[in-house]
Image (tube, rainbow, N blue to C red):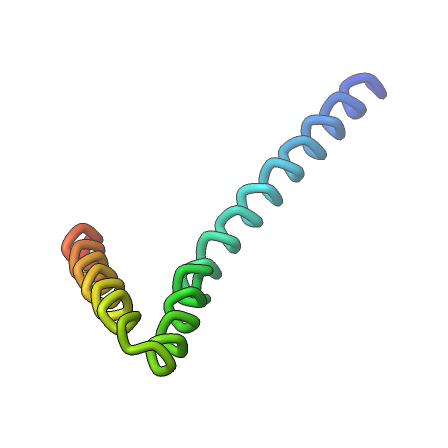
Length: 81
């Protein structure tokens, strides 16, 4: 009987580890959408640089246009809630 309880305990611990992993992955995925990426940081750096160097302004405007088109594509692809 102890062998059965031991096996169930090991299976329960394994299931708990898998469940915690799934919860951690879901939390990371959710928080990634809330926070900016390194791309937004580089965009901010380019924007500051565009103030100092006017020729960089074109690069910043192009990046913003690409981000806007990606946002529109994401909104079209995501199902309504």
